Every structure is written in C-alpha cells, then in structure tokens.
Image (tube, rainbow, N blue to C red; front, side, top):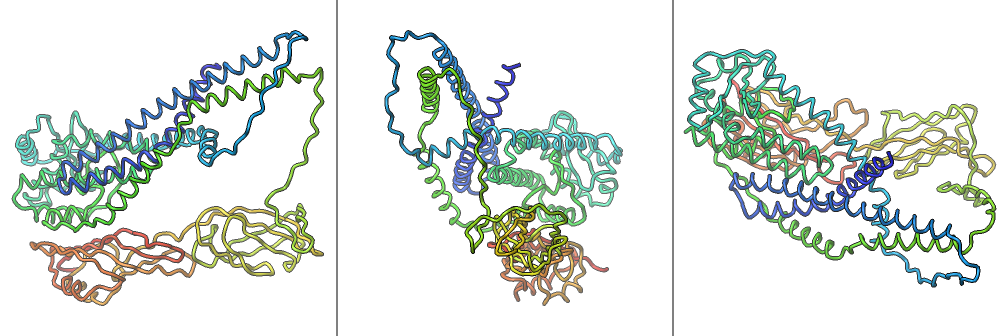
Length: 603
C-alpha cells in the first residue's frame, strides 16, 4: 500500500512539472511554427503537415519531460529516504563518552536568488498543478467520450438509403478519387449539413431531402468534398488532434496551432475538390448557401462540409482572392524566440543540487539530534495567532476588533456579480445598527464610494474581491462581516446590422440600409453600458463575380461598400467578419465574430 501511494505521488508531481515546463515549451514550438509558416508561405499541404508536426513535437517533448521529471523525483525521493534512515541510525546508536562530539562547521548562509525561490515554490506546488491537470483532463475526457458516442449514434438512428442514382454517383466519384474503401451514402433525419463519419467503414450523411433539393452540380461538389476527407484520412488524423487538444487544453498557443491545422485541412480538401471540378465559384456559392441555411452543432468527431474555422477565408481562396499578410507579427516572434532561448541559457540546473542539499540538511539535523538529545523534552508554549491584513484605526493606530453579529445584508442591486467599467450599486444594512455607523472597504482591487448604506463600486480588472463591512463607534472600527464577490468583464455584445442577425434579405431591403450603422447591443444586461464598434471586415460576394474584401473603420459603411452592397442581386451574399468592439472597461478591442447575409428575390 505504501509503494502504491509513493508511486502515485511521484506520478502526480511529475505531471505537475510537465505542465509547468509545457508553458515555455509550447511557446517556443509555437514561435518556431509561425516562423516556419512564414517561410512556407501559401503551400497548404505543407502548412497542414507543418502544423501537425508542431503538435507532434509538443506531445513528444512533454512525454520526454514527464519521464525526465519522474526519474529525477525517484532519485530525489530515494536519496532523502536513505538520508533519513542513516540519520535515525546515527541518532539512536550508542556513543562512547570519551569520543569527542562532532561539531558541524560554521556555514555562511547566502540569501537565495529569485530563481531559487521560484523553483522552490514550484517544487512545493507541483503536485497541485498535476492534480489540476488530471481533474481537467478527466472532465474533458467524459465530454469527449459523450461526443464520440453521439457521433457513432448518427450512423444508426434515423438513416435511410437515398435514390440509386445518388449512390451510383458517390461510388463513381470515389473510384475517380482512388478510394479503395467502400463508402456508404445515407440520408439522416438528425444532421443539418453533410458530414463524414468513420475510418475503417466511412459513412457520408446528408440531411434528409437535401440531395433532391440541390442541383446535380451542387450534389457532386458536396460529395467531392466529403470524399476528399475520406481520401486524405482526415477522420483518423482528427482523432489524433482531438486527443492532443484534450492533453493540452490549458495552453492557448496550442489551440492556435490546432486551429491552423483545422483551417489548412479544409483548404487542402477545397483544393482537391477544385481539381475535380471546373467551376470553383459554383462550389463557393454552394458552401455559402449551406452555411446560411443550417444551424451548426459542435462535435469534434465529424468532418463537416462547412468546416469549423476560417469559412470566409475558404470562400475568398476559392474565388482567387488572397489577403495580404503583415510581417510585423513575424518580427515579434523573432524577439520572443530570442527571449526564450536567452532564458533557457540562463536557467541553472537544480536537479542534483536539490538532492545534495536535501541529503546535507537531513544529515546535519541528525548530528544535532545526536549532540543535544536531552532526557526529557519540555513542551513548547503555544504562540498566539497574529491577525494580518486588518485595517488600522486612523486615530488610535490600533487594529479594529471583530464583532460577531447576525443579519448583515449586502445586496448588489443590478446582478449577483460586479462588472468592470460600470457603476455597481451596492446596498448594505445590518439588523439593529444605524446605517450612518456603517462603512465598507474593498480588498483585492476596485474602489467603493458612498455613505449611509448606499455605495457605488467601480473596477478596472476582473477577478475576485472581498467586501468588508465595519461598524464605526466611539472612534473605533469593528469588523462585522466579510463577503466575497466575483468581478467580471462585460459580456460580449450581439452584433446587429439593420436590426438583424445573419439571415436572408431582399435586394430592395438592402438598398434601404445604406445609412444604417453596425451596432453591438447588450441584451438582458441591466447596466447602462454602450459598446462601440471599432471596425470590421466586409466581403461582398456577387453572383458569378469575384468577391471583394474591404476593411471598414468604425460602425458606418463607406461609400464604396454602400455602392457594392446596393449592386447585389438575388443569389449574391455578403459577410461581416472580425467585428471588433470596445466595451466599458476594455483596454483593447475584442472580436465578437461576424454576420452573414444572402440576397433573395422576395420576402
């Protein structure tokens, strides 16, 4: 039982150290990945392989780190156990009275450096990091297994065979794309867009009735896209990617690399479809119509026609439009890489030093026990606890006393949390105490002003704060109650264009919206807060014509964009992407997504 506990403790601590090291390791790999992507430029197949390689490098590096830390902790634990046993034997062994006592030489104790303090702190709390990772990974594993079960359930529930000519077309296209596996085409009542499931026995699911509603060219384009996923083994690679996302769920840089892999996977499939069809604009219009007409559900275990990321970039690529790239971010990455390498060169090796220090400390302690062990040991007098972080009375300089009372009411008038950038009204009342004897203080950030039980709290940073209620009486303060509250930033607003979210719109209605501003509203938010639209990207996609991409500063359309939107005819579409807004309390603008509109003939 002791051996099992010993091994589990070392494994958890090694996991914690692996998580700690992964923060700078993934940052380094991400920097190298972005630099490599800069040189690779626009070759999507190599970009995709490079993203998967970066993710594999992170996984292997973390495995080696775990094994290294596990061996280091085993050696350290064994050394400390051996030193403890030796110390006990030395302390309990008889010693001749004539034998001179060993006096430890005086040591010059130097103040530890900041690096040593940080390493000691990490060593102390490494197991906490390990347990936090384990609990998070366990919860996400349950979610992942549920998603996998739901995806496999789609193969059996509510499915039926489509018409024979659609099955024959699917088999013909599979042979044309050199797919040796048998691909099953089914209609499903539980999917909203075409998707692909399975690796050994792949299945393509279309929403029931969609094959009959689309034109033959559109059916062929969507079948080619799903068969491209099968031909490229995307389902199997996606499983590998989902598992890595589970392991490194805590690191934002890993998610950025994974996002790049998802985007370039869709680009590669689009390129394969374009090679087998001669009308990329028809394919782009088909994807656009599919995106606008479906409600998307998240499931990592399916290959969807609309993809998961960078939909606007896909449409622009199919139309032959390539956004310009800035080199400023690459210079920043070079600076980050230099800083990481410099930090790695300056970091001292603490492994063997820690083991030696532990052994020497235990040996020295054993010597002290042997020299000064008395016949009896007097018990220590209990020390009186010291109160910290207590406010001091301004007049007397003494700390306020704590008074135990009941029915201390602290009410946030708007919502049950504080918000950054707005006035948060707070009412405080205590049963049996006049409100003019009450005062409040915020611990942990923010300011609070007011009197007689009515106060306004303001904050500049999210986090956790404590509100302390005091009673002021005869020049003294008595702490009555302490309550904890969360401080959150204002939630993301909802973008609206002409009072509408993504939908279809007539050409006549579109012409009426030429002077309408893009708004960002906060529905169901009780505070008087207004979010300002800083800018957005507008992509106009006329029917049968190359799309036009432009950036708009502020909430109002430019004259050029109004002219292009007014010229849209039924069958065209436009996208409003990367909407950046600035809400009260925001230091930098935030991205709240985008909108999509398709032009139709009549209401």
